[in-house]
Length: 145
Image (cartoon, rainbow, N blue to C red; front, side, top):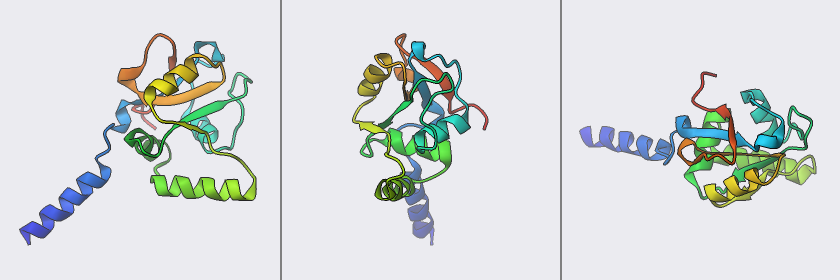
């Protein structure tokens, strides 16, 4: 019985044990984006294809991290409380119906920083520890919902 309980606990921790806790993630934007803050609802609209512009009127270019990274799973878990399989299914339906296309995916946090820092309309999510002076934090996922 004890072995069963330990197995269940271990499986639960492995399943939810992404390398980055959601509280470590922030949404970043280019300082020239014209936005100072992004609400959770705005971030959801941008990352789920419901909005195409930042609140400043600039065309939005949300940057997503690759499904291969634990950062992406943590981001969607915190932002919309969904597993990656659900997010991928959502985007498959939208793509198939021609309604929208998913955000551009990149493989590394460094790529997110490079794209966001060189494009006024780009937003991305990265671990707080990776933020540098080229970008600004517009949404802290650790903030109360």
